[in-house]
Length: 104
Image (cartoon, one colour):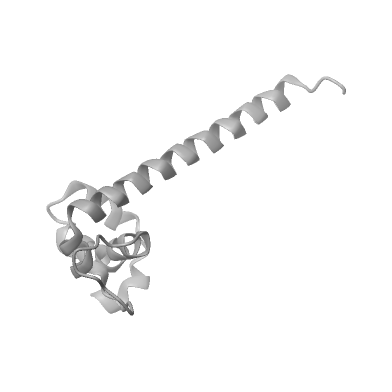
């Protein structure tokens, strides 16, 4: 097997590093979702805004529910908090507001 160039090897190392960072971010996001599900189940269910055939009281929300709930309330959060919350302001300024016509 011929020796690859130094640039090629750097690119491979960069790509492998990107994979590792992505996987670590996914693990952190999943851990946060599980934490929210087990710590704030009532708030998650209240923010879900969709339909499930069976919602069992006392059982923490599933990963589907915990990942759907923030998507349901993010636009309202950004619209109501963008004046006083720095993170909300940052996110709000970067969004395409023409896609938010139903939330205004």
